[in-house]
Picture 1 (cartoon, rainbow, N blue to C red):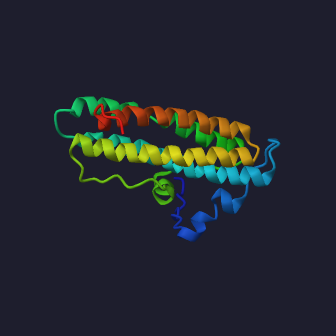
Picture 2: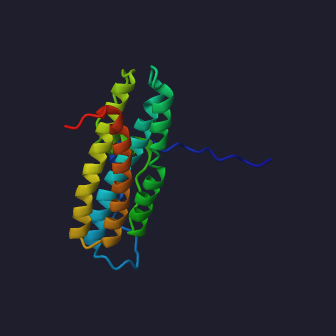
Picture 3: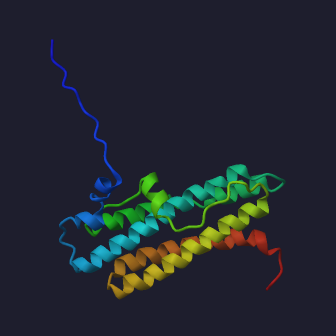
Length: 185
């Protein structure tokens, strides 16, 4: 009969967990010719946007709680805000630059800068306002990151962020159309 070895679970403190993050551990070796400093800064900004992107995806799912006559239309609209492909683009770019993509629920909850989605909302109008707020916030942050990537001479990252911004702006337009009611400002 084989003897079983007792496995002791590893209990990490927050400090030991954070030491494995890219900012603390450095970058993996790569033949990517961007300067290391530029890659480190880009990895940091991309991981921030990744956290926000994953948060945005979960916030769009709060359409489950919409009540009222516009439920089906808003449920369908909010389901169309599918940023999973953008999260993949961001995470893959992080790894291409030698970083580690930080996309776990715990990291996302700690890192996201998006507004909290109020869980007490019920009306379609309230949900539309909340989603349009975070779409606008995400788009604004991504535009700032485009400028930063350009300053770091990372055209590929700027291009990815431009693609993401284009898509987010389109969803913002579609969601805001429910708030505008045909009146120009």
